[in-house]
Length: 328
Image (tube, rainbow, N blue to C red; front, side, top):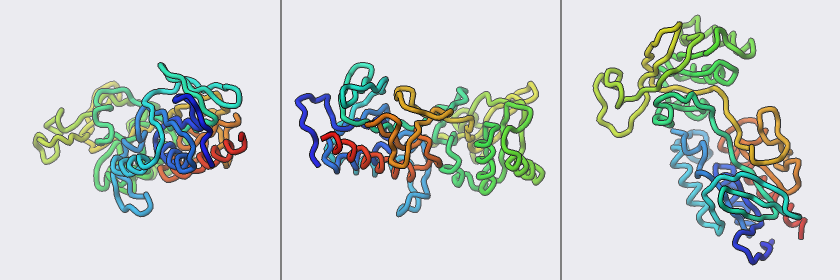
C-alpha cells in the first residue's frame, strides 16, 4: 500500500484527532501501512497521563500512567508521521475527502479517525486541579488499589459513583460518600449493596452535601502524614472540606474520587451520537459517515479501559486503511 502523493504539506491520507491510547495505537498502525498521517491533539496521553498506577497492562505488572505513556510515545517516534498541537473545531466534507479545521490552520485528508477521548466533569473547587493525579482521581478501576487500607471520599450519587464505592470497599478501610441529593440515585440492587456496607460501618454517607475544597500536605499541616508538615515536593490530598447540614466539616482522607460523570469530546464531529454524546460505531469502528472512523473513550464501545481503547485504535486504523484502498 502506498500513500497518495500530494503537493501540499497540509494534505494527508489520514488525520487522527487525539493522542491517547486509541490515537497512538491508530498512528502506529497507519504509519506501518505507509499512509501519510497527521495527529492533531491538545495533549499527549489524555486520561492516561493522569493515572497514578496501572497494574492490568499485559506484560507489565505495575507502571505509572506517565511511564506507560512514555513507552507509547517512544514507539510512536519510530514512525514517520506529523504531529500538530491544537484543537479541532470542525470536520467537513471536501469532495471525496475531508477538511479538518483548527483555530489557525486547515488540513485536508482522505479519511479521519476520531480518538478525542472524554473528560471528567469537575467539581470546580479549590485544590481539584492542583492534586489531580495526586489523590484526586476519576477512575476507580485504575486507582482503587492504590488506596489499600486508607480512608477515601467519593463525590457523586449515581450508579457510577456507587460502583466505585463498591470497588473501593475491597481496598479502603473507610469510604465517605458525598451526595448532593437526599437519597442515592441508581439501580436498587446497587443501592442495597451500598446500604449493606453502611450497616457494617465500611461507608459513611453525607446526604444533601457538597465538596467545598480539596486540601493537601502543603496546605493543612495539622492533617499531614505523621502529624507534621511534609517537606516532600510530592504533595498529596489529606483532607476535604464539605458542607453538610448547612455547616462546614473537614474529613481527613487520603484521596477523593470525583464521579459526577464524564463528557466525550465529540462536539466537532458531525456524526451520529447517542444520548451521552458518544460517537456510535460498528464493529469496524465506522461511523455513519463514510470515511470517518472513531475509537476509544469517545465512542459508545463499553468498558473505558486503556487496553480496549488501544485495540479499538488499531482496528480503526486498519478499517481506515482498507477504506482508502477502496478509493484508489
